[in-house]
Image 1 (cartoon, rainbow, N blue to C red):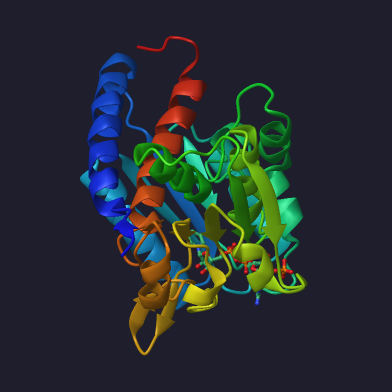
Image 2 (image 1 turned 90 degrees about the vertical axis):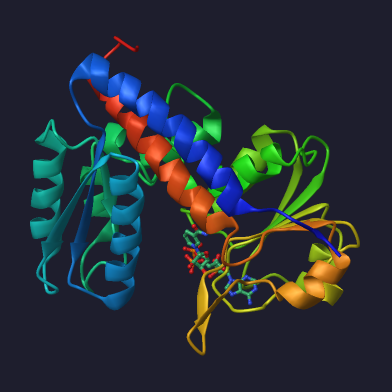
Length: 287
Ligand code: NDP
């Protein structure tokens, strides 16, 4: 049976560290690190994500704001709101919640965001700097959380064959880059990959961010592999990952459960990114 990679316990430790650093920063700067969530419309999934971010931020003593535009808002209205948040010194990080309304040009909205406030790492400047490892940049909190789990549990990354299933800008691609920068040999799979199982079966580290319940089954995993499941799916009202936990846990050496794996660590990393954004905006007077 695989070792359980307990994201809740790790997140608790990380939150305590981040909170202590934030308190120190707040004393020095007289400010509270604050995030704003921007959305158009009140889709249930967006509201539930916002509630969970609010809970994490308020518990940690961070600032939290929600900005909701009407469901039918156009690109111009969203860009105007993004510019207002860029100029607001009381807001350090901005999350643009997706999906945006049909017809909105997502790239225009994202590119309007000040990269220093882009705590999701989706602005092309942050994404490009991650690619090239140049200067300072924000990285999406979900892949950062995946790496934090691997490092906390001393899973060797250097030289390992890491397979990432999923190539989104927010999870799959940055996860692949973070692994590559840590000297893994990285293979990225997606919906057009031929014979997915043949590839996943070779992975020492298998990271899955697809959004399909139980896509990865025990027969697709190498004995002893480490499996990081980013999936969030609701099946019959129950939260399940992209990995079929029961069959994979029998084969793998280590696995993140869902819930209680990558989710809580992602939330902790969003706090860290917001504190980082606040520090960068405050200038060079780091406490
Ligand atoms: P996207 O829908 O943006 O991307 C899904 C990726 O999976 C795409 O690259 C797609 O390929 C690929 N894919 C789809 N079907 C298959 C298949 N049958 N075989 C192989 N690859 C496939 O999703 P996200 O990256 O935003 O999210 C992925 C999952 O992670 C979701 O469940 C989401 O809820 C969750 N998530 C979890 C977070 C956390 O904190 N744990 C945070 C953010 C997301 P193609 O590019 O070819 O279309």
